Image 1 (cartoon, rainbow, N blue to C red):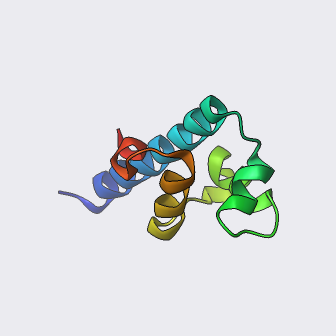
Image 2: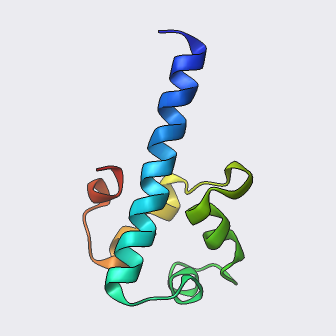
Length: 80
């Protein structure tokens, strides 16, 4: 597989995770700030940028684990 294909694939996964975080966060009735504070961030700015993928910000596996726990979902749901 070509490097460009791998990059496109990984970007699509990151986009999917960001979209799912937003979807499940909204279903739970939490704001970006509330979720950010729940997972130990000091503010909602990074979480907001990662949800929107601003400047290619994204959630790492540690973020995903904490978010899944707070939202009471299986971490795998963030990748579907």
